[in-house]
Length: 165
Image (cartoon, rainbow, N blue to C red):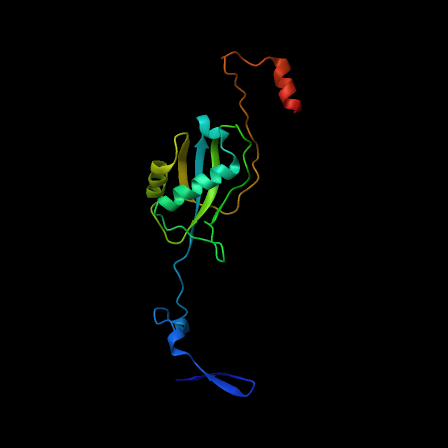
């Protein structure tokens, strides 16, 4: 048994029960690298009425049920490590919306897409899963499509009113 560092002139013996034999710290053993995925999805139908926080809660439950190697934050209240570029307005259908998810170990990308799609509610579809290229970039352009429920086109006056809002 090797003595620990002196504390106020007293040498504390090392506690053998606190040593972890599974990790050899002297060789610098590291955990497998985390994998950051960029997942593209669409929200249609009644799911467009989910608020951002409700959508996050739904997605968190789906990810927990998926048995994927999800990485959690450190600390007292661990959360799934995922990030969104911004919150969506309530009532909007979207195509090509993205979020990043961090996994603790590599997984086949098609497996992630199929596993999530099996568990997601109707109206939310996974479009693509890829390795994240980095931080989210501000979009160069955004395209809005205005539709009326009765099938008639919007009049020029109503389009001008919407543009001023």
